[in-house]
Length: 78
Image (cartoon, rainbow, N blue to C red; front, side, top):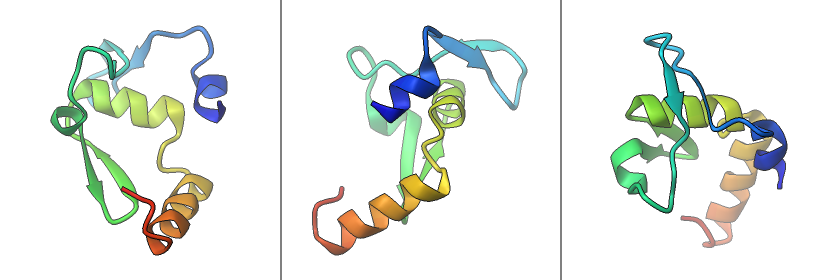
């Protein structure tokens, strides 16, 4: 739910590296491992789609990383 609030009505954003308008990662049509890599508790984007998704959905914000740490300690993530 939190991610959707950040996303709003947008379907993409400007890639912070190239400045080009790029669609968000679509889990229905794209494979996660092609666009992201989990490094510890942080999501590392591998593609323009990954970069805009991580940026706009704030996937590496402090609270999100802390949640992943807790889930990992409980054996519930990934």
